[in-house]
Image (cartoon, rainbow, N blue to C red; front, side, top):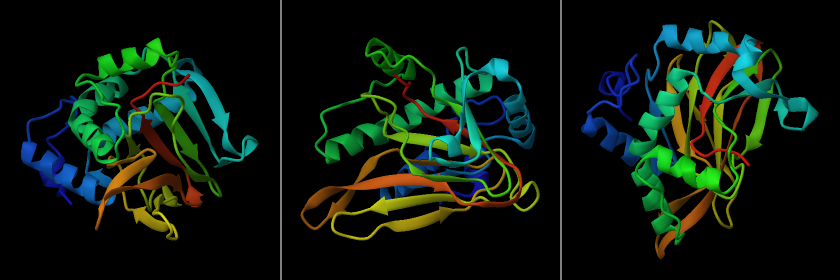
Length: 247
């Protein structure tokens, strides 16, 4: 796993894509091996606070979801409307080119014919032509007793197989509990859970739906889901970066 000092320059406050190819090579290796990888300190404390503070401004969002009404868990989230806040838009467009190679390699290994273009704008055009025109980046808000059931963020026919979640709050200070959880379902095996420890500003990159795993007879697919364990106290905010739009 890359050290914070190795990845802090990847996307500094200006949300620049950076040039540290060695760090991205290590992140890619971890993502291929585990189905997830951490980008330490992707955002600064100031940026995290600014993003979390947007939650109260309903004008920025296209819809609000109260999770318990739909059986998704407890808590709520809001999808940003277009135009996205500048920092969210830049995260989307600068992270995508770093991840598109992984996405294409995974599809090739799993025998899926779909390939993704190098630029995020071109992929969004593909989504929009298919009727997936609603933005999917979102802010999630949890209070005491809230949690997010294991799920997958699919939204339509066109799905980019990797997404990103950034923790905007301080574990142990702003909230307790509320761990980010991944599960992996391999064929004919029980699910394997993993808790990903995050600090404020850290991001986790992870598989949206399924990913390839090397077996003795080649690659096979494993099914991935993600969620958040129960928040014991305080409030937790998360930024979700999904690269495909919704129908």
